[in-house]
Image (cartoon, rainbow, N blue to C red):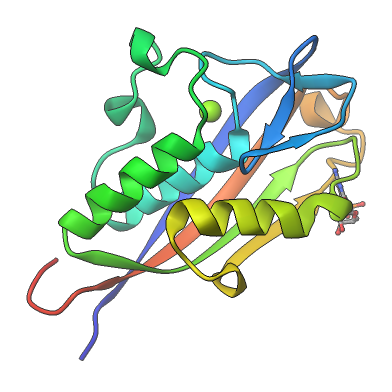
Length: 164
Ligand code: C5P
Ligand code: MG
């Protein structure tokens, strides 16, 4: 019988003027972008943590410390690819990803297909196994006031026979 495991991930970044808004590796036209040491791709970071969680391999900060100059300005799809390889080495194959980005504006619906394809390519997964959902925070709290964005993710992996 196959063994399945699930991991959860969450992330938040400040939304500031003068930074690009990158979600799932896709640059989204926006007046403000996410601030951080890397490209601050809040969605890629949440999925990275969910995948690490499913494989019980720690968290994103352990693998990619924000004090490490190697990751300054890094494209976060690099993190995803690295963690996918780590999970594979530990005996886990990805089954599916579900995720939610919570951002007041801009509207992201038009970018859903591009984001799914970008994440699917980084994870070497079919796009049909990558779900990306969008929500506002109904003008409530820091996300609702346009000062930050959050992302949540759940990842399921399957233990490859004889490992995990
Ligand atoms: O937050 P709310 O429930 O009002 O969002 C309604 C819909 O708007 C979402 O289901 C999603 O399709 C879309 N949305 C979006 N971009 C956002 C937030 C929400 O496209 N930044
Ligand atoms: Mg982050």
